[in-house]
Image (cartoon, rainbow, N blue to C red; front, side, top):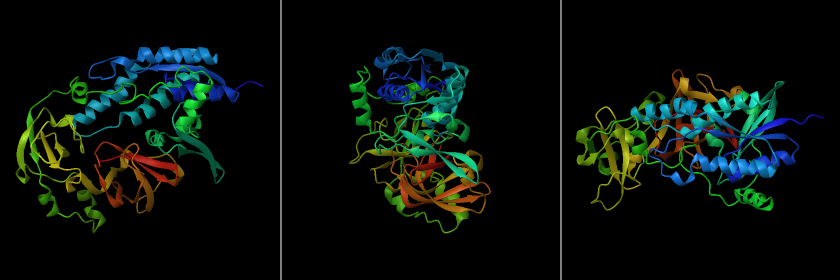
Amino acid sequence: MTKEKVVIGLSGGVDSSVAAYLLKEQGYDVIGVFMINWKENTGTLTAGCTWEDDVTFAEMIAKKLDIPFHVVDLSDFYRKRVVDYMFSEYEKGRTPNPDVLCNREIKFDLFMDKAMELGAKYVATGHYCRRDTLEVDGKTYYRLLAGTDPNKDQSYFLCQLNQQQLSKALFPVGHLLKPEVREIARQQGLITAERKDSQGICFVGKVDLPVFLQQQLAAKKGNVIEIPASFMSKKKEVAVLLENFIRLCSAFPYKPWNGKVIGEHNGAHFYTIGQRKGLDIGGFKEPLFVLATDVIRNIIYVGEGKEHPGLFRKGLFIPKDDLHWVRPDLAMVEGDEHEFLFRIRYRQPLEKATMYMKTDGAYVLFDDEQRGITSGQFAAWYLEDEVIGSGVIF
């Protein structure tokens, strides 16, 4: 019997290394492929772990496992689909999530196409998530499930995948805990067993964000304005009617006269809500946090202390065109409302909320106020451990 062919995205890390080993043990015809997605070092803080290092580790793993190895250069596509989108979003005062985009646009799109050209039936990665199938009215649906390891669950990063992409995806380490993955690597003598996990932007690494963004976005001086907590307490946000949600879900309409100028910054588009580092303003008992940014007037609004009321919101809004249903059979229509568990950033605990579907999109009201809801980020909603859908926060 002919073995089913699987292309594994070998990144040079322990997770994809063990994934490749497990696939081979399961009887698949495994091909290792390394993606070159970013070659530049401007603004990066991880020059000691470049893609050249990664490809060397990936090739050594392929030799150890005795599987074919290829390298594909997708850097032009990555710049156009991921990095250029990042620049555009930051310029608008929004905070994108490049890791979610990378999975949707690169790993499970362009890379998947390359895998199919090699005759593969499936594409596998080292993500900590799981996939299974479900029959509904005679039709098969693919379910995206959280990884078994609660500390490494990466289902949030895959929340924009569609049914076709999931039908061809395999996640061999999703049922394992991270220590178990490293132990398998040690037992098999894989050189990546003790290698540190990559950090920062997908395929770019850790970056000095202002320096990185200055490749395309110009620095420009502007005012930093402090909003006192006492001002916020005068404006208690209460959702009485759904029609008032848009006020709840957007940034508080600060005005320059709501506070006082306490310093300068080099560009409002270099900052994001909830940010603490990079303000370089002293004289306060507690750290300052960014409450909002105004890229039109080039103003940053800040507040003192991590419990400043300006950091918290009760709800969020996702425009209709930015809604994505991983499970299209569960898609809501206008007039529907449903309780889900929500995540608005990686590793954030799931939070209870109710989604209300209206003509213009989805309005989400949380049971408890959420800290640092940020425009441009992805919100993902779950039923138990299954990702049902996701969308870009307005």
